[in-house]
Length: 200
Image 1 (cartoon, one colour):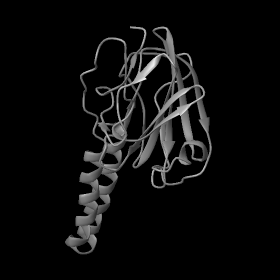
Image 2 (cartoon, rainbow, N blue to C red; image 1 turned 180 degrees about the horizontal axis):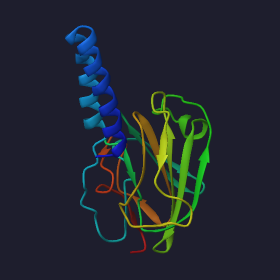
Image 3 (cartoon, rainbow, N blue to C red; image 1 turned 45 degrees about the horizontal axis):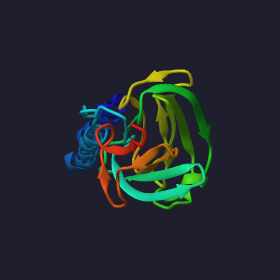
Image 4 (cartoon, rainbow, N blue to C red; image 1 turned 90 degrees about the vertical axis):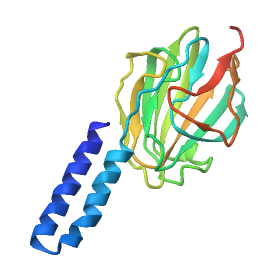
């Protein structure tokens, strides 16, 4: 459980309790429902991390785009409100850059969100490779949380942050990687293999 979820749930439950006492008991019900939703939404389950020369998904969600770029391949994952929103590192290594960019709050499933929306971008270097991945805010998700800073070391599948409510995560792979997922596939952070090293 992400601590933020406990805080939200507690505040909503207190509001519901107070309304129930001073007004109609039924007035408290929506707040109790929202408190329960927050406890569920901010869940943070443990995951079995695959071993070997692979890169795991940094997010739960649906692969909405796999695109070839001059610098490699970009895999875009859309998270709806039913997905776990804790993000993880695709590979082990050193965070050589953590860059926050202000932007818009367009619908996260659209490709333009990759460039126009508010985002936080990690670049992790290790295991003889480098991967860049971005937490991207969406229409509803307007709060990006990062647990890490530049210079930190992370393990494959380690938690690095979260995005509150619907959002998007983009992952940029270099030419040394072979994509192991397809568009429309649902992936799980830390446990789904997004790509494999070609030279392994």
